[in-house]
Length: 316
Ligand SMILES: C[C@](O)(CO)[C@H](O)COP(=O)(O)OP(=O)(O)OC[C@H]1O[C@@H](n2ccc(N)nc2=O)[C@H](O)[C@@H]1O
Ligand SMILES: Nc1ncnc2c1ncn2[C@@H]1O[C@H](COP(=O)(O)OP(=O)(O)OP(=O)(O)O)[C@@H](O)[C@H]1O
Image (tube, rainbow, N blue to C red; front, side):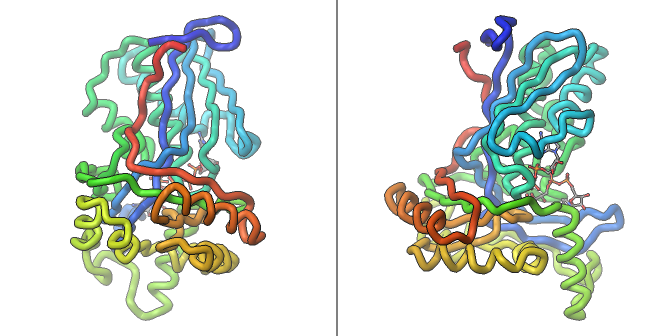
């Protein structure tokens, strides 16, 4: 499916959601520097859109509130995705990629990963590559640990470094508020701080020291039954202490959301976005307004999940 871009050329647009980690259990540091995870992902309705249009060479543009923080060179994950697909199929990655960015940058919501998955699917569609889902997932895993989940969406347990996915059943819709912080946090720096805190506590930080991470049965049950109160009690993020250590001001944001009536609060992934589970859409609006008024965050957004992963939009 294709639709014209602003120059009238036919393009393919893919919409990709953000994620929140409802459980992020982090094992010890592996010899390759990554950490084994039990990573329970939920895709939520905040979206980036990636449009691929034929061009003479690979070029990138980006619009949106955080666009100035997005690199437009070869390090951009969307550009890397297009190159990876082209290389596998012996194609010239001559494409213009436009990212309409609404997911906070460096916020722990997998925005760059969403753009990578979106670019991959958009180029596959535009070029008629016909890659299988397994091939797309393999390319996603090469690009980053969160990228496979951005492609599939819904809810899933991520094992390994988060790239080995098992879909999870979800029995309802969960409502969230996301408090967006000023400035991002570097994901490697947060994992490193997690290791430092573990070492400092005497626990050690390697796979020999830390038990294998496992998903919580109570959390999986809460997802399956769609029970927000039970999910609130089971939310857990092993990176939260590290994110708070690097950004102590996040404690005030977490408190502002729970004071406003959220069922539970946690840091989203590696942060600094904080996530608040609420009972329904009305409570989401109330908690978001209270967070904006609290002065403890840059802004607050509401979103529900699960939602589908990367989706080609109909011609528009
Ligand atoms: C924090 C999460 O967002 C939770 O979903 C992810 O674990 C991070 O996924 P991501 O941003 O796709 O991360 P990648 O691009 O694969 O890796 C960036 C860096 O994060 C650290 N990293 C990432 C994933 C993992 N399982 N262990 C790690 O230690 C490593 O230092 C790595 O060099
Ligand atoms: N398309 C992209 N969009 C945003 N950032 C990108 C992109 N490509 C590369 N980056 C780089 O990746 C860094 C992390 O951005 P991203 O928004 O993916 O972080 P994140 O949401 O914390 O990721 P995660 O939750 O997967 O750990 C940015 O600081 C930026 O330099």
